[in-house]
Length: 519
Image (spheres, rainbow, N blue to C red):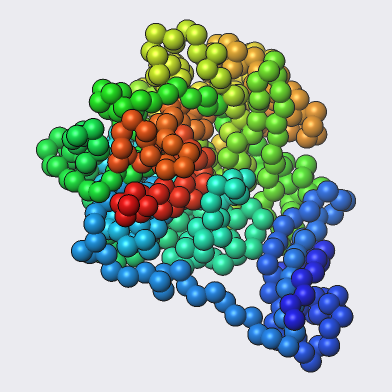
């Protein structure tokens, strides 16, 4: 017999495995002598009361033992001699797609313009410390994709888009903590995810796949109306049974290449705004009613949203105990993002705070056609760069000054390593974006008492929330209808918004590739 039940415990109690077992057995009302195992299968924080509680869902096994499912990797077999499938991009869509191809019996051959996850660190150090942007290796480009060094949050609301449990189990089988299978808002951390990504690479290579770094796709091989392969670094031709395009949301050159080749793409709504950074102690005081927080409580987070003049204003990619990082992918632009290490022990909490940008908002850029949203995004990033000193220092204001439309005389402390400087974001941001952000954060201050404070920094610009271009595909076949053999996948294609949703999309597309190749 397996009996599932709910427990509400204080944080210190929930951290005591023996106590959790005891309480679960008591609540199950089953004879203690019959209990073989108690397993926590779900864990979340409930901070609605005067004191935070931990909610646990536990499974009590009586008269039968818990039997774990076989490892997914146990079903893998070598594919060295199998038909090859080209994958462009070694982010979550590309890597999880590659694993799915191996399971399907096809050979993944991956090309990524960036470096492997270890070598990539040098370029991240260069942008942090010296303001030097490598357009092929940065926080967005390289092995593991944008999520590897920008947080590793695994939460997704895309439960209908794929097999979340399979994606999570594969992460665990490659070194992630089993806690991610239990936590309501799982998180790995930028200090641990690189090793997991490297382990996935080793699995792909072990079973006969290929992975090529410093390999930028510069052309597509289209013959007889079908996608046959790719050209790498302007000289090497590589052919496969199909091409999975999993380049991420910032590979602008790929969008332009598709357009030149006559492959249809579309302008897509996205979101743009700023990153707002508070002291973590302040957020803990607001959310937990305590500061400092109890030892067994994680750094607190928030999620806020409202409507301003028909557009959503919302928090995005909230990083408790985190850092703000420079995420530009080319010289001459300022882009910021957020990340947290596994312990989430920074003194700061940051979150993207953005405004939805719809296609009708892009009239000043309509001359760019399908690139209207992309060029709008680029123009904001370049405007903010031009306002500075040519480095990756980011323009910022105190939150109160941002709303008042006045220049800050000085700024609070920040986690942003390149540094901040006071700048008139109320003039640098597009007028409608600034106006909606201003009203939005006012509303957030009413919803979350203490949020609206001069202790917070507003940092520009949070502009890479999602791709500003969509590569259309058939809903059933996942293939581009006008380019047979081309399978757009993940965030860069406009069908995902985070590590897990991109991973699931990569899996779905890989299965579709399997059906295409076999039949």
